[in-house]
Image (cartoon, rainbow, N blue to C red):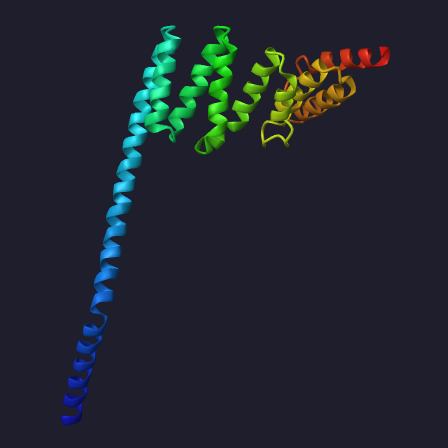
Length: 215
């Protein structure tokens, strides 16, 4: 019994010495742990608030576009970028606004919106569509080399056919007929493999073949 009491006493002293020695470190660790929890919750609340604001801005931009007030929509979109530029709603609002600019024949502001989306690392999921649409806008503006530069890299998954077709169109505009035909054939092969309708692709290929033979 005496030995057992001595062991318990010794263990108690060891615990007290350990607590005394490491109490500061324990307190700091607890502060950091609870601070991390509260910080994470604050971050979650912040993200939720950003998403809610983004949704509100998106609805306003969309309504302004529907009403034909593109200048007002552009102002709201700029305010949206300043307030919640990293939300997915910003990208969606931008795509909506750019499409409206194109429909109104205003290609320069549409191109600016697409470039802004491509510059935003948080909107990477929209980059393939934004690149294709910007390439088409630049094509319409006669800026073929810049447009081709957007499509130099390999096509993202799911965009192989449209990517190759757009490149073919741009190459043809530059007089690079053989390269254009090759790109269109690639697009046709991909579209056929996916079970899609070749549409105008075969007509383009036939025209390029005729032009190539004539030259």
